[in-house]
Image 1: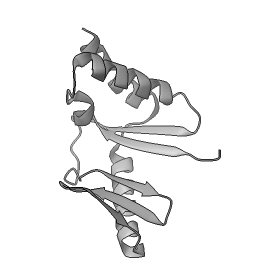
Image 2: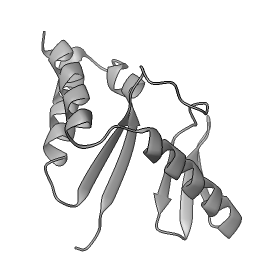
Image 3: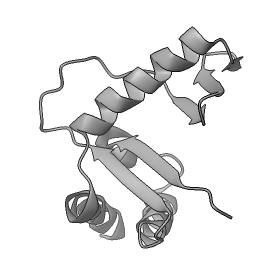
Image 4: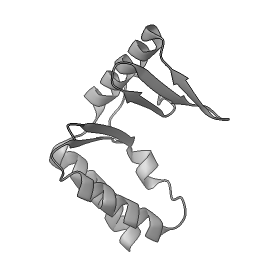
Amino acid sequence: GGRTWHFLVAEAALRWVLGSPQVMADQLAHILTLTELPHVTLGVLDLGTPKPFAAPRGFHLYGDGVATAATDVGTSFLDDPDDVAHFHTLFDQLADAALYGEQARALAGRVHRTYRR
């Protein structure tokens, strides 16, 4: 209770077929359902809009105390305040460039429909 979730996902990740088109369609349907929850925010970084930065590797933030960063061989757990601040800054950059609300749902819906064909 009381938690909020703010997800950022690249359109390229939504379009990368992992498994099968059916698996992808099911995952996107689930994501679209989650966007209807009041404590979930989805931002989608579309492919068509120029960005002022390169796409980063995956990372997660857990409040102000911990960040995790993906590597080729595992996940790094970071709790140094400067490292966590770096990832908060990166998240803010990405969030500023993302589509939200109806725009994000419309883009995800278009991708979902391509998998349903």
